[in-house]
Length: 109
Ligand SMILES: Nc1nc2c(ncn2[C@@H]2O[C@H](COP(=O)(O)OP(=O)(O)OP(=O)(O)O)[C@@H](O)[C@H]2O)c(=O)[nH]1
Ligand SMILES: [Mg+2]
Image (cartoon, rainbow, N blue to C red):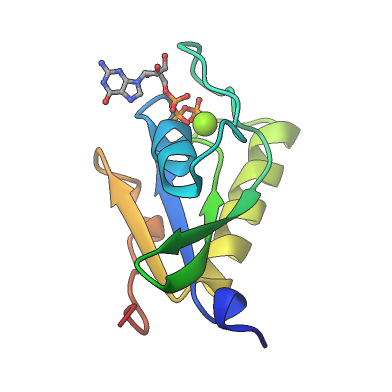
């Protein structure tokens, strides 16, 4: 496994809280689509962050609405759970649903 892939940081949270904006800032390019409409991101998107001789992978994820019943939402929840399972750390804010709060299994050093 390369140094970049050793650490995966997942960005998670409710819709429209600025996750993709943070992702683009971290990767240094407009890779994720930003919009004021909640639910813009639908699939997990990966990027590489290089900072101060360190590098790691970051994942942008779709906004979480656990109580919403739809096929699309079920797919979103599964994708985000999978990203969290693979993540070594996560960034979450704006009170993500509690099932998605397990974070930092092995912190970035
Ligand atoms: N004022 C302000 N607006 C922000 C900030 N960060 C993001 N936005 C705006 O908020 C809106 C949503 O930002 P996104 O980054 O697309 O939010 P998201 O959490 O990825 O949204 P979903 O993909 O729908 O879950 C966009 O119109 C952004 O320009 C911020 O720090 N301040
Ligand atoms: Mg987004």
